[in-house]
Picture 1 (cartoon, protein in one colour):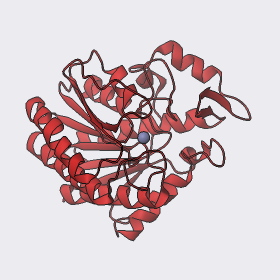
Picture 2: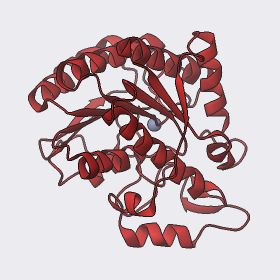
Picture 3: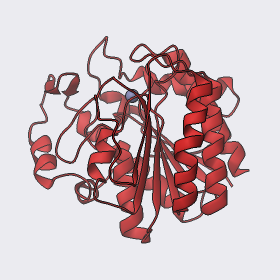
Picture 4: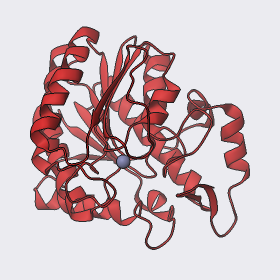
Length: 310
Ligand SMILES: [Zn+2]
């Protein structure tokens, strides 16, 4: 079976926070180039990202927050919503398609149309909390998808695995009281969003890593923290918050991972998915700001999804 590739073309690109902002439209173009370099660009089941309904977004966000955000979209210019997140005329259109991509990918995987899926979307989502935008994120794309999976398909055990270099505080905030979701996040600390390393309750697994951590320590930490938790949960569907900013070249953080480390963690996740849920994985782009490293890392991640689905 195929790997679906959900993208949003010009819609995600229209969200532009200005020259010099690392979360730029160039990121998606870089991934496209990376797919060509590794020779998988023509092997994907390409699909347009649908738009997420407001109701689907309000499953995981405070309705008042969503309404307020929609109300302050500027006709021109940019409105800051936190220190480094700017709302532009096209931001929420992009954000609704980013969340919609994860919903569409969840449907395609759950209905058996494809083995797994990758959503090449922006803005990212994992810092968006229940009632606030944060860290380049407006809506929790993966959280919206996971809530959709539980509401529409009645899933009782969903795993979200987040290897972005920043802690997925938004996903954690949304699912703090939702034991059907196992949330595992590896991240550099101290670093934005300066989360506490204490895990609570038990369905929230934190894997903090010190600045300078390389692939060997990262892999051992995943084997120590994530794999036993996944074996205990036996997920029915796995989401990946696929951030590639733990790469050694990334300008926003100080871990030392290589593209091969993202291949390794993807392969381990695919093995877990094969064991418990017929390989069902929905992966969605989060961070990754060194364009060459992002291209190589995302491509090797997607290539691993493709091989697992064969
Ligand atoms: Zn990040």
